[in-house]
Image 1 (cartoon, one colour):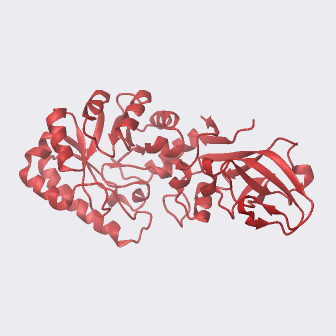
Image 2 (cartoon, rainbow, N blue to C red):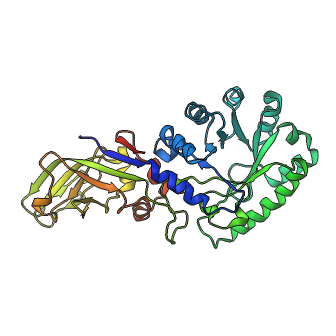
Length: 365
């Protein structure tokens, strides 16, 4: 096979979901964030696998993602749309049973006018300064009461900004602001459910967990507690096919665009199929490496749109794949997403979502 092979272990994703469940206090539900096609891994395969593991609450980014997800998730799975509902998309939410997360007064007004008694979620901003009702606006809405009540909210939520830094003071500040807001909300809707914690927020402790948590990156193998031993396991392996091996008999030969790299000795080079159009610029990096025959082989020269060059000189000849075959691994159990992301200064979910569409995807049930 001459395409890159991206292996996605669905059983590992299920085990990671159960690992997050084990962090929860009794009575807290564990949902799953499947936005951006399950962080680039293919939500049409990932979401049903999580449903089979026991997950019943899913979070997508957009109405279109929710419409797609409803085609492969049963009706008893609750689908929350994190980016709310744009004008004219209310009917799609209603027909597919999607629950929009509303965060502006204008969205609330439109939902009341068009949705009848269909449920929604309401989000307040407690310190992320991104999506969410300002606390002052929320307090005024609570005083006026009727608009919030007419929208039939079933979930009240906010989002943590610094949960991957356990000692950051904003974590406690956001918790206090959320507790202040939920007290007001529960005077209107005593039975409303509460959600604050993402993957890293779960690990802050029970005070942050409330009724429903929303792990995302951790399900796909990203350590929710950077600097500590990971409670989740790797999910993906990426192998690039070797499409040419070149023996360079002398030093002083330049490699790649702009001649930014010059060989200091004779070398054997492997050209692998996969470049920055496939996310390799962030996965590997110009000073990165892959694994061939159990050895780490460095990248040399600039990464191209469709190819990456590795120096495989140190791999014994008898361990090299046959001519025109073989793969170099650039992600896998011994080269996981946390390691490669840290090396190039990327976030783990940035690495995953940058994976292109040209790989052959192999799902392990």
